Image (cartoon, rainbow, N blue to C red; front, side, top):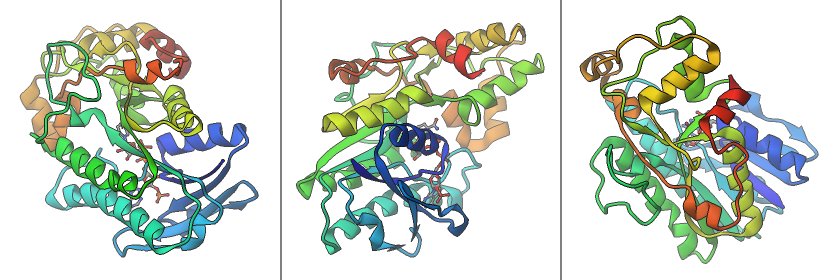
Length: 302
Ligand SMILES: NC(=O)c1ccc[n+]([C@@H]2O[C@H](COP(=O)([O-])OP(=O)(O)OC[C@H]3O[C@@H](n4cnc5c(N)ncnc54)[C@H](OP(=O)(O)O)[C@@H]3O)[C@@H](O)[C@H]2O)c1
């Protein structure tokens, strides 16, 4: 396949690049930074600027599949400016890709766009949520972003293309991402849960997440899929498992909610919210997780 990837230089994108290239796929990718452009036989970079709505249309040449991951990081203080950048970088970039396809001859047949489990209601009780269980209205900022991002993406299907959405959970990786941040205090014997420690953390190993994108592309799947591991855990047990793996017992009491909010501002919602999310649908399509249990992921990445 010849795939156009956005967000290729990020945490998830770089793992996906590694996997797709190792499987013999050819990649074009879009970046906002000239310094990130490479021009190899099977890995070619092209520039875009989402604020100015400009894109190098040569990125489309020969492409049959688009995977769209790009978006400004949510791990920053949520000032009004930052919130606008977080939203626009996802919604406007999707619009820019739609324009690209509408205004140019192309061979694209399928598009896979990212979303996040932040779209699900924040709740500590009840069964794991499946893809069809999202309420029609958002009740917090991250859910607003996900809904706007997914709605814009649905226009790919309206254009007659196969379209799939992956609602990504908390991505665990060796370098960067949530695990590194969670492990830092634990290494200093300062590890603790947050709030009441009972929030569901629907995590996924980065190798499995890359595998899910590849599986959806190769199997030509359509619709919404949760990108989470089959065995989510609650917050305090997760931190305790990290402590156990690092041989640094977690003994401190949980950090109260109000302290988290003072430290992180509105962005504390990312660490305090609880999403119990099901992986059943992607498994029903034949996807087999390499790292279904937290202990296996910690063994690989810590
Ligand atoms: N990591 C997680 O735990 C997690 C969880 C749920 C959802 N997700 C979603 O999955 C996607 C990938 O996550 P990630 O962790 O790999 O993110 P990341 O490491 O922050 O990488 C984001 C990528 O987006 C591009 N980007 C950043 N700001 C941009 C802007 N204003 N306009 C256009 N491109 C921009 C960057 O590419 P250039 O610098 O090359 O332009 C970068 O490669 C994101 O949309 C994220 O919201 C991630």
